[in-house]
Image (cartoon, rainbow over all chains, first blue to last red):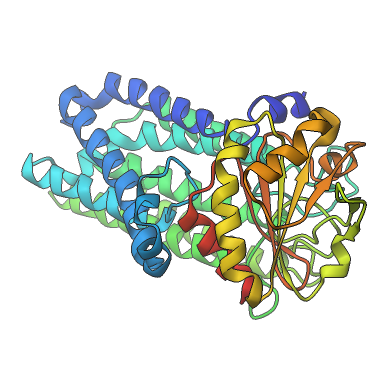
Length: 242
Length: 180
């Protein structure tokens, strides 16, 4: 079944999964955006501008980082090839464009982030499925009976672990009943995502290491988890004081 | 939940997380992709030996020490055809620096009589190899054409590009990476 799925969504078709997750997340987020003080139109606009910023920013920053290559073939900047892309730069550009739009529309930051959280949670599911389809983010070798054969070894099904974690996180975010102060839903999502990465990175076979043995992603996830919990606590205390 | 209870839980989570970083540290080196051959970035490029239309035999592992672009293609595949001029241009630019291009034709799913005319029409000067049995397509787990594997001087796959046509700038950035 996994093989059939991998064949169906083999790269570059795995991008379909991310686009579908984005669309589902946006559709679901629309249903609850008013609750967070963000109209459907504002939610769609902030998402649209952020995506445009992400796509254009990713391509432009890649071109700037490889200026000499593009100088010799400037029309490559319009190539439909998705590999001409800087994902980190794209993320920064997307956040920047979304922030500028939000400020112009005088949107409350914490409420807007809460309204966008279902999109992020849905994207995490899409990303896990895309990893499974492409065979990226693969696990370390294992002898456990649920290991999957990938890249010429039996490995931890790290993409399936990631998928289960992202589905659970989505469920927790979507079915979260209490009405917390603005910003908590988003911070809970960040904390849960960082926590799951901290846990599951241990089963990855492609970790970048620091000091010879420690996984960079785990250290980063622990730092993000710490910041999310501190920010969450700070918001709760301020709400209590008011 | 009271503030104190919440803070205790947060502290326990952070302590457990910190301990987990040490417990799950990669002392055995399993997190490096390893030296086993697999068609994925970070792995050794699966070795193969194929013949050119002229009957010359080329083995990938004999090219260790040089940067190699393995391009899997077929004459019936429009993006494969479209990217060949860019590959030829980049090959001519970088061959002196140590770039080798191996264009592996998926002959087992192509018309073998189309290959040589195609190469002549496009004036391709890099080696064309014929995968008549599908062994290379299978070893490289071919799912889409074209597929390109950028292999560094140590024989490790640095980047895999599935689909095309590859833009000239993309080829140039990836080739410069494997020539380092």
